[in-house]
Length: 303
Image 1: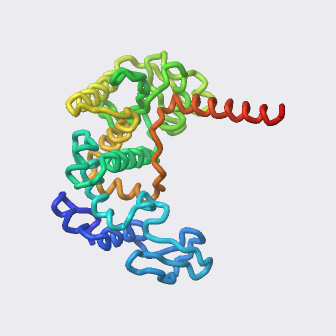
Image 2: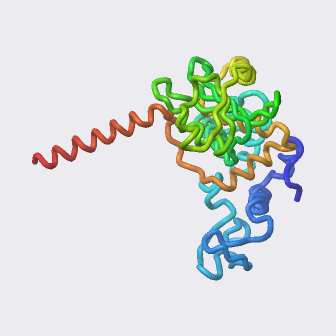
Image 3: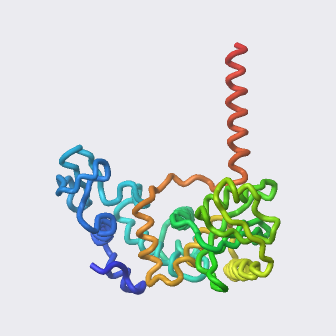
């Protein structure tokens, strides 16, 4: 079996059935043969259901399957071919894939199902930032579709190598958290002099430099994102799209973005989709919940 299809027609042919999809997921997850994810025992397991790739470890009796603890954990097997097509469209198309278009293209019965799939795929793309940016990193803040965004760009001379973007709370100074999350310790942080706090130089081991002429790379990235969003008539969560843009940009030299995505998908769990809450609103939600619980507890005590 090839590592990845070369075009959409080949994908539809190679992954036309749930069995073909399950076989592919199995090969990606265990390329050197099965091993128990619980005890790491690598001997042949007890086969519980060969068609569904369900197995039981001979040592610890832990039962698992090809889709367990992956993006496809809660997916009905009959929908796997459609999932593969959806992943191909979102990862391979340059434009922003809209949920309504995806629903019609795949023949899904519900718009909300298509919207849910797009959000899940984009969130998985956000998990692709396992390798932190390193070397010379330009850090800046910009505005995209009237929202504040933090930008980190790994450069080599005048060449942009990789990027990381996240939506920022304008009222909070979260540069330090952003840098520690996206940039490897020991890297050279290049700013305009007003961006990253000095504490990073001695607390996290970064080397801080000031260079105003480096900010043209930030302008280039921001202009590219804004242009794509404008032509796609983008509506929805900006952070969700930033995940998609960073994934496509960082994997632009890869032969198959579909294959790169699948390698990430088999390592992440699918989550029950909840209404998206912007990062700066989560603390407010948590504070409101804590206040509600404290108020409830006080009422019990007074009784």
